[in-house]
Amino acid sequence: MTVFVHRSIPLSQESRNGWMGSGAVVLSRNVQRRARQLDGFKESDVVINLGLVPALGVNGIIYNHSDSVRATLTPSAIRKTMPDLIPPLPKEPGTPYWVKGPGERGHNKTFYPAWPKHVEWALPEEPGFDYQTHIEGTEFRVITVGDMVVQSYKKLPPIDGVRQWEWVGVKGIKDGGIIPLVKRAVALVPNGNKCVFGWDVIANQTSAYIIEGNSSPGVSAETAQRIVKQISKLEN
Image: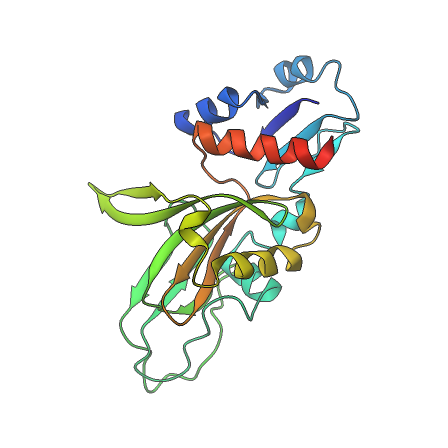
């Protein structure tokens, strides 16, 4: 079984090296070069779609079907898919909140300290946007294959504007309800048993919420190896 990685956007050098170090084949975005890479593709081979990508037209095992990706593609899509698992809508005056829209690496995300008193409440009109009540807590990135957690990281303060993550592993999120939360989220995604996702979770002593679902998570070599290993267990 060979694992192929099909991406919608350029990968960071770290992610590219991570996938290649796991033994996966990172498919070219050049059509002719990609066709050569897929020569000899077998039905037992696996394609991981990173993001919303055109179908390859191969008879294999697909992870991240288009309907799975669309279910978490934007903040408004996540609210529609799993309304009980994400931070509630900010309806009370004075509630700190976020306005979140489609985008990568924190773009289209703005914090506001208080919901206005004299504004008639309504969802954002912009396509894909959503409001989320601000939750105090620690943020984690949790990587799943199906509903199995294979890796997790804790978010640290940025350095020179660059996001920082500390590896904590599966043991680092065994408390606080994070793993059950992520399993519930996967169950709500169409074809969730055939997904490779990165979930951004905010957790504190009393609660945990999904704040984003990412079908194209950045990976290190170790994380990519764990993803491929878990897929091999499921498909062999």
